[in-house]
Image 1 (cartoon, rainbow, N blue to C red):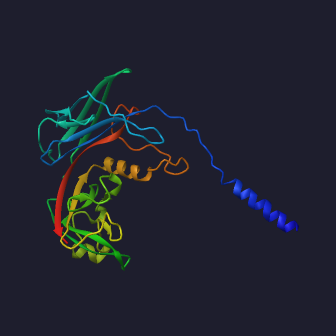
Image 2: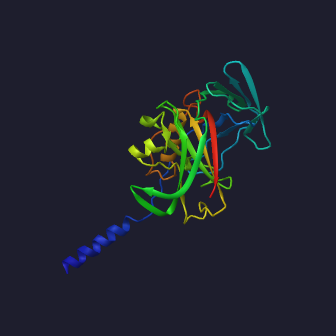
Image 3: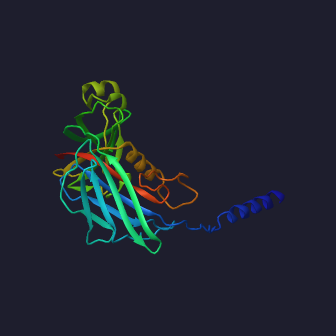
Amino acid sequence: MKKTIIIILALIGFSACTEKMMIDTPEGEQLVGISGSITDEYKQHEIIISRTTPFYGGEPAMISNATVFVVDNGTDTIWFEESDKNGYYLSVETFAGEPHHKYHLSVDFSDINGHHHFYAQSKMNENVEVVDSIIVKTLIFNAIELKDYLGVYPYFQTLDDPDIFYMARVKINNEDVGGDTLTKCELFNAMGYSGIYFNGQYMVSIAGEFPVGALNQKDSLQVVHRGDTVTLDLWSIPLGYAGYITDIASSTGSNPMMGTPSNVTTNIYPEGEAVGYFHASSLRQCSVIY
């Protein structure tokens, strides 16, 4: 009988642990969020300016009527104007950025708290000359074929620089796999294999083949059908931007009991007054019909 009572008390104790706990998290000051890029694509480039969202989510408050410009290599000034979407600023001119150039961003606006000035800079790295080809085939991991997954395997001559970071994103019929989110991109650098042919005979003999994207054939958003066009976007990005993407990937979610207890990397100044990242990067594309 005593044993039965102990078990009942234990069950009552466990059930008490399942009661909902409301945690009152005081909201911190809303910061300014700035994101944007200059690439070597010939287009209008974009800068997005907003306020950060509350801890438990919600739509960000976009910042309008800002003065935005980018200085190219300390000489040419590129002006941006707000588009039809509040907080979205497009370059007035259509242009392509250039590798080895430094780009300095300046953002000014006024609100009830006074005048604000933010700035950032980024240098565009060199990129590979060309992605020669990509192959889409069954993904192999640790010598095991994963029949429900397709790997995207690129072939190109890597740069002779172990510090270059590459960012890869896969598209199916020109639609980003997994949506237009940074956490769906793959980051990698060649490190000890820099300067050799990526997925070439020598690399495969010492390290095996390396996919830069995986498509889950059971996920309706990733399924590739015969005749579909698969495109690989390959960027050469700054080291700091790679850290920013990694921080975002490890800090997602709104559960206060989970996640990395650290701030996301930013290159927007003044320090502590803004979040986001402004970067310059070069892009190479390659497509194949599956």
